[in-house]
Length: 117
Length: 115
Image (cartoon, rainbow over all chains, first blue to last red):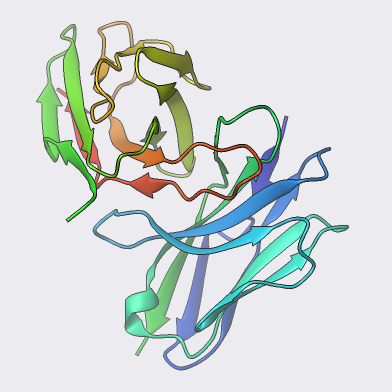
């Protein structure tokens, strides 16, 4: 069974600085998808960025980028120029590309990010 | 506006009572999901449905039931058999498709508290 591990329960960053959130996963599959979701205090889950395992190029979305290391099974999220609105719980998630159309997501336990003004 | 609605936002239940959480989507998505969120445990899948009149158990289905009579609706019933129902419940939907990184869209959630 696949697992996702986020080893940093809490992180803090100064406004305008850069922070990296860690995520590792365990799988025997070769094709899969990885996601970072943001959950602000409103508790609405918002997709931040996604990565397809067969793509070597790291995904980027404006100030958000990932460092995808397939061999190491690592998928970290880098937030550049941190803003107060980035303060939230961040979840890393895995989805298999096999097994039919389940689209089942497997989540890590989350990292609570605080942004200091 | 397209999206997912969940109601109510807060729900209180006495022990021994069944309660139903509503989830409606107008995104025309075939697939819908229910997750439970507890502090320090991330989100765990309760039930999912890929198509109307069909659904499957997720990782923690015991004590829960669902129905999928309409494409837009996927209500979750928390039964008295669920031993620890106090949690935050999230509904999601997506376009199913093997081999695609289809995003799951989430509703705003329902906070259930058992008194």
